[in-house]
Each structure stands twice: as structure tokens, then as C-alpha cells.
Amino acid sequence: MPAIDLNSDLGESYGAWRMGDDAAMLAVVSSANIACGFHAGDPSGIYKTVKAAADRGVVIGAHVSYPDRVGFGRRDMDVTSEELIADVIYQIGALKGLAAAAGTSVPYVKPHGALYNRIANDPRQGQAVIDAIKAIDPALVLMGLANAPILDLAAKAGLKVVAEAFADRAYTPKGELVSRREAGAMLHDAQEIADRMVQLARSGTLQAIDGSVINIEAQSICVHGDSPGAVTIAETIRERFEAEGIDVSSFTKAG
Image 1 (cartoon, rainbow, N blue to C red):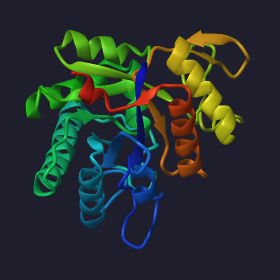
Image 2: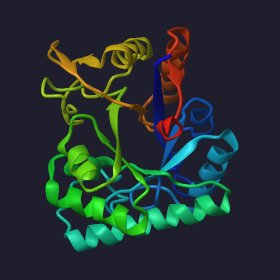
Image 3: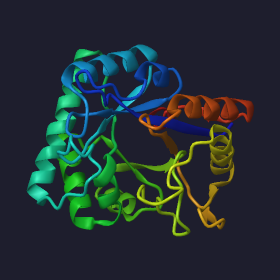
């Protein structure tokens, strides 16, 4: 039976500001990327989501970001390597502490937003993130964009890596994500998205925004927790996978 991880970005509420439906999403996904306070999330809310994930048996990862709450971590920042290393170590350490208190652990790291997109092809900032992970816990797995150079860079540095695809995002013919600033960047039709993800899981291919077919080898699929209809999208993907005999399980359980 083919298997694939289904993940979502959670723990992003802040005070009275609610983002997504963590409880509902945790009933669907196998891995949860938990905000670490730099782009979203407050300690109380993050801890609540971590405990809920632990109760559900959902694996959690550190969703590290640029320090950009106002921009939700989606604004590019030309930070120094020293700053980025310290920021990433700080965020991972915070989540590791909350996870330990909740009786669980943090086996992987997934950069968020602009940082995720920047390090996909920027070797300097990519190396800073790698150095930070190795400094705090070299056993951590780095999750990154499928086919992006960051995965090779991290693997050569001795880190385990997991390639990720996005269920609710359109792709360019080069296999990159279509910018959120462009029309058609976000996908919303749950059935169409589920069809695409079955194709991805079975053949390692997707249709790009121009209609061409691209190769994307991924071990994890992300549904953005803050997207409209996110829970419905995730539920539809999982239901289709189960109907197609595709097992949904965290990549951490594959050895």
C-alpha cells in the first residue's frame, strides 16, 4: 500500500485573533507544523495545540519563520546568517520545551512562508537554517519544497530531509509555487484538489498552471490551515486516499 504524510500549519491563533480550526484539522492530518511565535501563535495557544496533537497521536514539527507577525511571515527579509541561526534555534527550542511539557517531542522542522520560499533556492540563508538545526538537534528532519536545491544542500550537510508538495497551491511549469500575488495561485475546489493529490501520490506528477505535466516526488502533502475551506479540503483528500488504498501516515513512522 502506498503511503504519504498529510500535514497542515497549526497553532497560528494569537490572543483573541483566531486562525484556522486546529481541533478539526488534527482529526485529519498525520503531521502538524506548529507556529513558534515569530509569524503567529502565542504560548498558551501553541501549548494547547501541542497537547491536542499529542492526544491525537499527530506528529508535530517546528514551523520556524522570520520575525514578522504583522506580515504573517510572508514578507521576505534579508537577515544576516548569524541572526537567522539564532532565530531558528530560539524557535525550535521554544517548541521543544512546550512539547516536552505535553509529553511529546519535535522530530522535524518546516520553515514557514517567505523563509521557506527564500531558502528553497538561497544557499546562504538555507545554510543558516541547516546550521541552526544541526546546532540544536542534528536528528531533526528538514521538510522543504520538493525538487528545490535546499533538500540536496541539507542532505549533503548530514540532515534527513522530506520533500513536500502543496495541495492547495498551483505550480509553475518549472515545478515552483505560483506566487500568491498571481491569479490562480490558490486552489479551492476540494474534489479537484483530491484528484490532483491522488495523481501525485500514485505517479509523482501534477498538472502545472499552464496545463503541462511536471514531476514532483514528495513524501508529504500540505494543506494550509488558514485557507478557506481548509478542513474540508483535508478531509476530502484523506477520504479519497483511503478509498484509493493510499495510507496516510507521518514520514517519521517510516523509519
